[in-house]
Image (cartoon, rainbow, N blue to C red; front, top):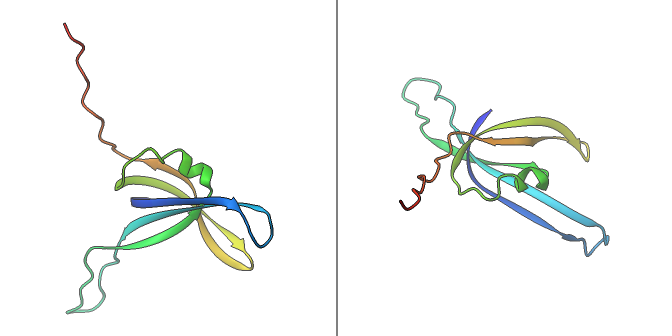
Length: 105
């Protein structure tokens, strides 16, 4: 699925409640609105959504500046009895590269 990545965050540490380590990753995306249904209705633009993902996936893109377009792979998993969509890979698309620096002649 193609998305526009508008931000991401990570949080890790030791739980004060249980003493167990944790690592949480979130990917914030702008997704296009579905076309409006019915005459006289309008739906234009984008809306933000947040996906959970493993911090190791974010480690591969944390050097990038947002926003950028990316192809993401997702999977549905069960978390405490609720279905949740998680991102398992993020591949940046069409990143602008810095101009090549010419060496002095």
